[in-house]
Image (cartoon, rainbow, N blue to C red; front, side):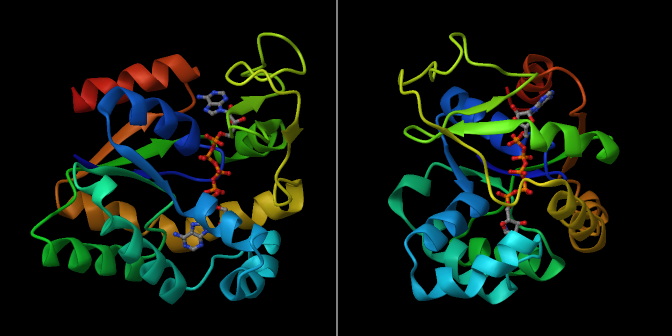
Length: 214
Ligand code: AP5
């Protein structure tokens, strides 16, 4: 099964991908995570994209298409994947169709995670992750069971993303409206688009997604 999760920053794409990965037995591919790894490794691509990401702008289609094309050709994607954060432009969506067609593959579902954009600043500024295992939390909506300790690996080290500040979040929301929202009619015309209410509590969103796939 090949799934795309579409939604503005904070819609819950990462949160739900991790759950779906386990439930469906297919891998999550987050372009944001791949790009953050490139920045952390200080590779030549990482140095080029660092300031773009910190400012909330999109990285170029060329970089994304090359990165995702290389990634989905790996054997762990042969059963399918959940794309979290890609495609984000029409050029990326068309390139993805072409790369899948070459392998006799196609997307099965595109999910629009519909939210009230105004509420996304609060969601994102409250987000933090375990530095060791990557598990995601929120100051209000998803706190660790024992304060200060990760539920999954018991480590006490948490971090916040450098682009999770109100000014950058507003720029990322605008990038979604201007460059990613045009993908909704593109996928609706292909009869692939399903829309869910991603303002509901996290567990409810998960069960609404499962109802589509199972
Ligand atoms: P990326 O990492 O993809 O960030 P994003 O799209 O801005 O999305 P987020 O990770 O902020 O939100 P999310 O929807 O995953 O929300 P989450 O589940 O964490 O991209 C970062 C940057 O990389 C971009 O700005 C761009 O520069 C670059 N980039 C990446 N891909 C690119 C591409 N294809 N092309 C070009 N550039 C690209 O949830 C947020 C918080 O809310 C969490 O704390 C969570 O616990 C909480 N939460 C989740 N769901 C709910 C709920 N239902 N109710 C209450 N709280 C909830």
